[in-house]
Amino acid sequence: MSHKDLLAKDSYWMHTDGLSIVLSTRVRLARNLKDISFPHALSEDEAKRVEQQIAGILEQIDVEGERLTYLPLSQLTNIEKRVLTEKHLISPDFAQLTVARGVGISDSHKVSIMVNEEDHLRIQVLLPGRNLHRALTLASLIDDKLEEKLDYAFKEKFGYLTSCPTNVGTGLRVSVMVHLPALVMTNQVQQVLGALAPLGLAVRGLYGEGSRAFGNIYQISNQITLGKSEEDTLTNLEAVTKQIIDCEMQAREALKTQSPLITQDKVWRARGTLENARLLTAEETFSILSDDRLGMEMEVLPKVSAGFVSLLINSLQGCLQYRNEKPLDGNLLNYERANFLRQMYQRKDG
Image (tube, rainbow, N blue to C red; front, side, top):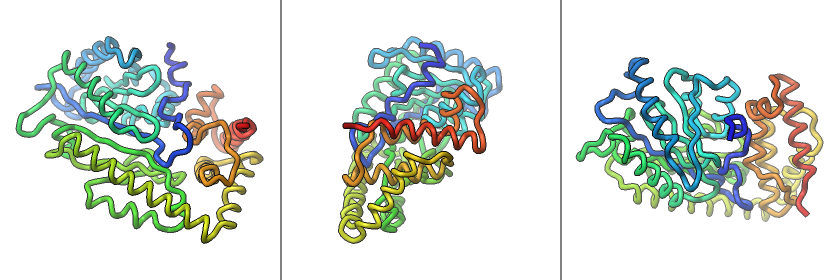
């Protein structure tokens, strides 16, 4: 598969089955090579040697019948790096780097492995819906394959050594991406999510630390790895996720009983905008797609064939530009976004 085809396709995690509050699951393992400085302290020549060593190994690995394609960041255009960021295959900070950095991506995008990010290796598995255990199993399988060929930095007392102290131990970060429009509409979201910090969980926006919760979408992840087993980390997040789902469902019931007309008006206005608008900003798009999704899940609106996450990601600037093969900004960008969404909303399910 050419790297153009690889970047243009929808990522596997973007196809959430049915209608679900949990949009996706991510498991990430941070790993470093033994007796080699962390990436931020490497010279350019040292970083290149690390990249060459790891890249060669990544392209030999088979992941559930899929090979990894290694993409050096230095060979990618700014738009290509933006597409990778928008699809959550690399981090926003990583996209700003070029020398001796790259990412190995499986054909389905289930797996992406960043080389010389904050750590020498960031092994990431992204799956649709609520799939924590499956994601960890796949990440562990890849980790085992890499550990057969690489010497990891590991101390019996501390576990895996990482650039950031909060990742020391298992090096595991698990997160779920959740859609909470009813909690936002009923002004309960801060109360519910504010209770997570004492449980060792962090709440961030769609694109991680420092990003806003566009489209009423939040990422919830563990903060501490030292002294906690992988199973404990997963069990904790699984239990909290279930509680958040319950709170969102209760908020939806409250909207049905306490303000049905306001809710119906809100979601039908969103559908009308998506079917008819000629100009749409990214922020407005996320808001109305969120309302439209809520309308479908509450069985107020007819379903559409295009998925919520796929529509969100494909309406972003990088993906729109990549698909149109031309620079887009200002009203031209907003026009192409509205045009794309109108076309998608003409394809309704029977």
